[in-house]
Picture 1 (cartoon, rainbow, N blue to C red):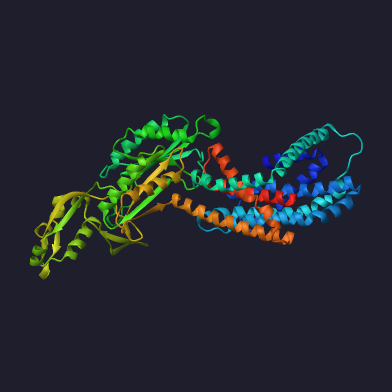
Picture 2: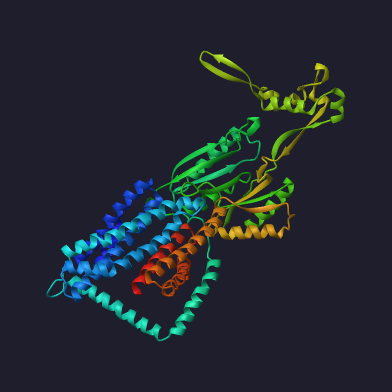
Length: 592
């Protein structure tokens, strides 16, 4: 709504006439209502991406109407035509140019709707929403706007109003400065060409030095603190830890509410629960009610948690796009778990030296208490005990045997699970006394054929592409994630690991690389399609070059604007560049 109001005010500022402003501004609600109809037919909903497309479309749909109105007004003023005659002649004269401008916009945004991966899912509704709006704005500019001009557009005789004098003064001032710059540039054509070449060349180093992120930092007012305690921490101890963390978190500024969760469900075949893990979800006051951004409060929370030396902590935004995962997830895969631990620790140590890298950790933990059963195979053979029988007996003792029978109580049917009581499966003596089957229908104690040894082992053994895998995780604080990616890859390469050990990014960091590749393809397709549209309009293979040569010149200035504002190259920044392409193309078509 505010976008439409400001667009109408800008039209009034430069046209200086309320009738002209109303005629051109009516294209906004008319086009948007038509767009909503097409969105309904396409099965779209009102969400973040479609609303973003509608917001951007506000500035686009009014352009065609202004171009049409200005040309009709020129016919009335210069040729003394009636409004009806001027509407007919003006529409014929500039109608094809309006169609060409809109077609150029369409071929820019339609490729966005058919990109692959997660980015394509995000941008499909966005690209098609703008395409719907542009298509309808052409129809409005060629039909509704000329009709309204023929009925209501008039040239007032006599003295101009104060508003008209003010807008004429602004237009004359801008035109005078533009003519001076144009004359200066035309007098130095070779120098301007050299400047243009330098600007295009500068695009490469500027792009390399620009920080890159998948999404911009968003103040959602919601973040979570992931906590992992040492293996073997009891549920009672976790409750005490979380109670203390909650108490201290509530003392931080602008904390509105807290939700805690301990345990992450079942632990696989052995049916245990991971009681040493949990998270604290923190909701902050509304942004308008606090004087600190969420990034500052994340830093305060990290400082608060730093005193808990035995805990592995990660503080990250929750909600929004992809909340809940670490910014960097770097996978290292290979056959040997100890080597993976060595390599991942080296990469993590390198990342910890980088200012702005926070919550650096690895997924490997070799601290889970366990009992190892070491079988004396010669003794087991003498007693006729099979290894698989020992494994089956231990699995039944510790994990239980499911669905051994069924129990019916009225209309309810229950599965019966056989499992030893807790006191018989968590003590060494009880495990040693386990009776295992032997040959001849006999049974024997487990300690007669095996030795039960206490020790520690890995918390989990993850796999990626059928290889053992350890993951290095990290978040960022005021640095682009692409820098962490580069440092992680550099650190792993310096290890000179054997070829059977592979490494690569995962999660949002991987999606960042995919996003840049997909947008690169979309840029190329946009260039090709724009050339086809312009070549068909001018009926020449050469004339479109004079328009398209301007497009690469816009990218360096867009990147410089990101440097000046301290922003990284993100999904929305690239979407803005596509919008810039469309605007520059439309302006160039009008000039030519």
